[in-house]
Image 1 (cartoon, one colour):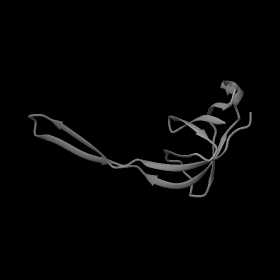
Image 2: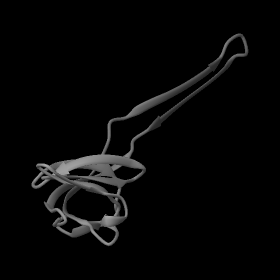
Image 3: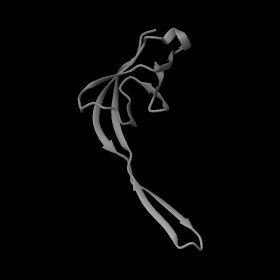
Image 4: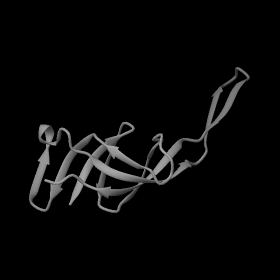
Length: 103
């Protein structure tokens, strides 16, 4: 059994006990969060999607808050003596899926 959820503008295929990394969710480690945007639930031959999933949610436990790798943004305009160098690290949340919606 698996589900497709949407969080942080991205879609994830999750199953029971999966550990996924998503964009930051405001919750402390050990907290339980509910992911309400369920797009699809499949169980072997049964496939449910669309309006039938309104009100359903996937439950996950926050394992920890983390940060992604450093990404360097370098902009250069040739022959203009213009350079800019910036760095960025994305805030992430690591989730463990605890429960999927029943069909």
